[in-house]
Image (cartoon, rainbow, N blue to C red):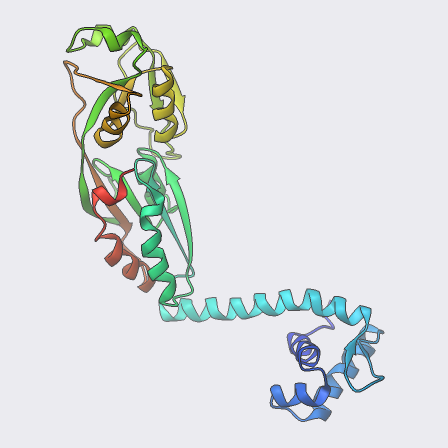
Amino acid sequence: MNSKISLDALEVIDAIARKGSFAAAAESLYRVPSAITYVVRNLEEDLGVSLFNRTGHRATLTEAGAELLREGRHLLRAASELELRVKRVATGVETELSIAVSDLFRPEAIYPVLEQFYAQGFGTRIRLLREVYGGSWDALITGRADISVGAPGDGPPGGGYTTKPIGTLEFLFAVAPHHPLAAMAEPLQNDDIRQHRSVSAADTSRNLPPRTSGILSGQDVLTVPDMQSKLQAQIEGLGVGYLPKALAETYARHGKLVIKQVTETKPEATSFLAWRSNGGKAQQWLLKRLEQLTLEELLP
């Protein structure tokens, strides 16, 4: 069924409502008044309703006209946005970019970059994702993310992405002051640790095999959503485990955690900035700024 309401007619009605008269609307749209009158009359005949009260000097909308304009403005905005997005595709600028941020990092660390980005007027929508462990790679490989900030260790095979190291993260074994391991002699043996529950942040991978780290064979595990939840669970004494050095030391200084030496330490892990290799102009601009962020700026 052909719609009786065109975008052109909606634009005319919007102009009349904003300008207050057919003559002023015609001037703003660079048309003659008779052309404006013709569009309105045709639409009123097609719909079988009056859209304007024609008494008085100002053109005021009827109830039906006001409803048409209220909903019509949504359509005008959507059409305008669609037009811009089509133009952006033609100019090589992405309509949307998704950035996955590791749960080890502060998302607000990239807010100043986003502020500068919006000032460029690309018109690209940004979506921020929070990913845990291997999920940072998974998001990139499966197309959930275009850029990944803090992807850990070696990337998965298959290519299609580019990487740049951000820095190396150290991890320390930490327990609550009231936890049984807090009073044990150091270094802690694996057999000592195995007797107690570990806290693990769940890998958010959907397609890649989930990664785990620092959990011993046969050890009970409390799985939580992210690093912040893991930190809180360890402070409460619900379990033990490795935390990024800066995080562990901060809470140890405040007496909320105790750092323990262990016989088998967790190896350091390199964090990467990684991105899909087929990015457009908006992605290229963002990457230049994101590459300047340091590990210290990104860590809590």
